[in-house]
Amino acid sequence: MRGSRHGHLDGDRALVRVAAVLQRCARRDTDLAVRYGGDEFVLVLRDTDAEGALRVARGVIDGVAALALASPDGAKVGASVGLVTRVPGKAADCPDCQTLLRLADDALYQVKDAGGGALVCA
Image 1: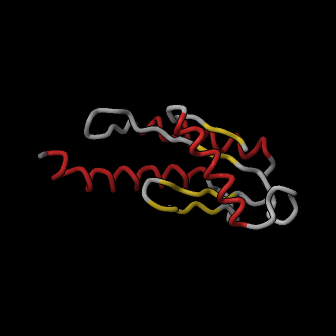
Image 2 (image 1 turned 180 degrees about the vertical axis):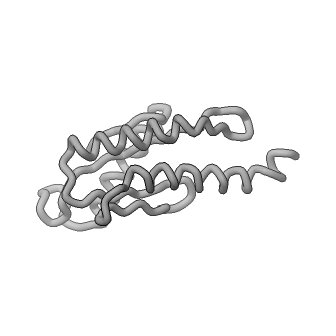
């Protein structure tokens, strides 16, 4: 019963801490970090090449790991990153922003299906 009594509040606190990591990683005025739903976040890095995006993604993964969060069953909480570096409308496989989100979501689920805690570049 303890998990059901404290689980949601603890989960919300964990999400706030993870969001703080993303905010620290999104340092420029043009960077945008938002909660997308549930335990998923989107980090938009304008004018960033693949190398820069990889550096930020690794910072997110390392930053979340450093929080040493655990779920009620004791499992460690980590970050899984679906990384896409495209300019909607300029890349042949990315005609619009919705496609960009789908590509990132597909990459994210590749990571989650493989056990999480890492990143996949699409």
